[in-house]
Image (cartoon, rainbow, N blue to C red; front, side, top):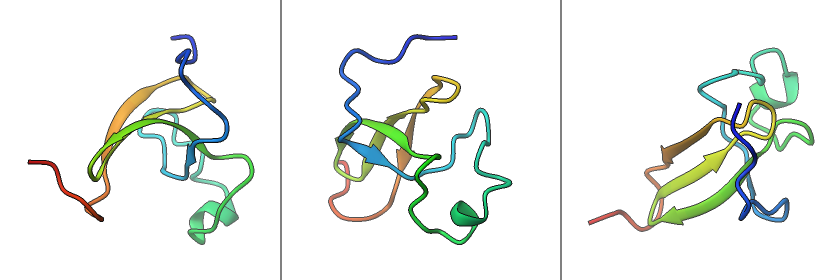
Length: 73
């Protein structure tokens, strides 16, 4: 298990399903696409529409392409 990134800030969060632990699968709030108080991810950074995230539950880090807003060149 990796440590939480030292730049992780609870004030910068995203609500994206973790591809590693899938902890949102049984959460009615998450399944309804609403903001859940338990299943958020650290938003470490972004490059255009690509988010760099870390799950506080399993500490998995990944990049998620949103397809919204500015796109990467």
